[in-house]
Length: 214
Image (cartoon, rainbow, N blue to C red):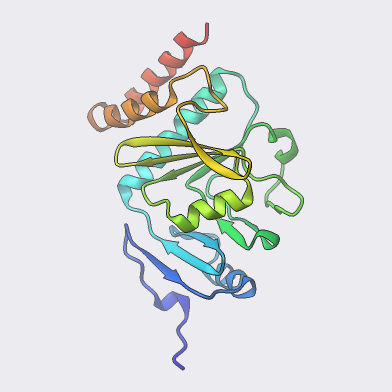
């Protein structure tokens, strides 16, 4: 049998590799070998591990959407804690995921000051963001871990999924920002940023939020 080390695998930007029949101990060992400081993202469910490498346009979109969420939370004076692309995993569910970005909102106080997450005792993030490459494995992992709200942005379109009775259902509105047309606002902002740039787009987005609060 030929044995390869993970550092020998090369994942090109925009691509992903899948490893089958990976048990939990192997998953933990792979995470340890990959380390925390890496551009790749993982998704793990039912003994299937995916490792993906995002494209630059993916990174730009995820940062912009994350910034829009921060503006919404700031302008609405909602307490929150951002956990970025932290690894979320739980042995009992045989699931693990690294979102493009995520936020604790309802559970912000509970997670304040924590450097690591243990889903055996901690809640999953209240809102997670994925851009372009959400797979079935990733969606299954989010669902198994019980993330209440998931935003998926792909090909210029935003899809909001809310967890209902353990299953994701598409929704026209965000559970966290029901007073806003989030789908339209995000899609328009991403398109606008390609023309006007990030800074001007976010300034305009903030003004829109401010004007809609009252």
